[in-house]
Length: 109
Image 1 (spheres, rainbow, N blue to C red):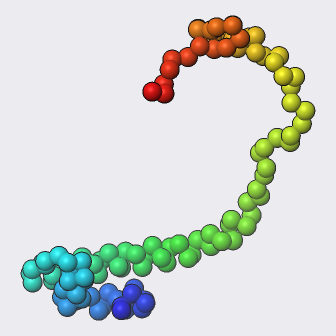
Image 2 (image 1 turned 90 degrees about the horizontal axis):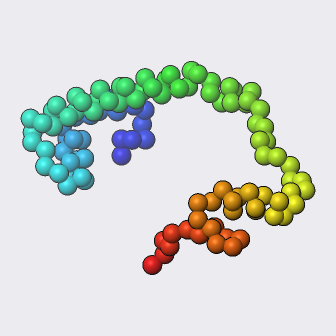
């Protein structure tokens, strides 16, 4: 309904009727005296959002991201090391071992 318009226009349109409509959609009860306060609060929130919107458009974020070069940090695939050259060192460093296997606590029931 009113969300398609600019925030500046919405600010002047927020009143008790809109608060009651939103409350009905949200299925919550809002007292008449609370609706007036909520209208002011929502208006202030929308003004703040408008300020944030203005700041983010003035930063030209799109232009700054174009200057960043992306680099591939992965190494090229090459020849892997010879299979098993580290096995003896790893098994010797394990606290519990049985033959050429590391013995671990059972975790699956």
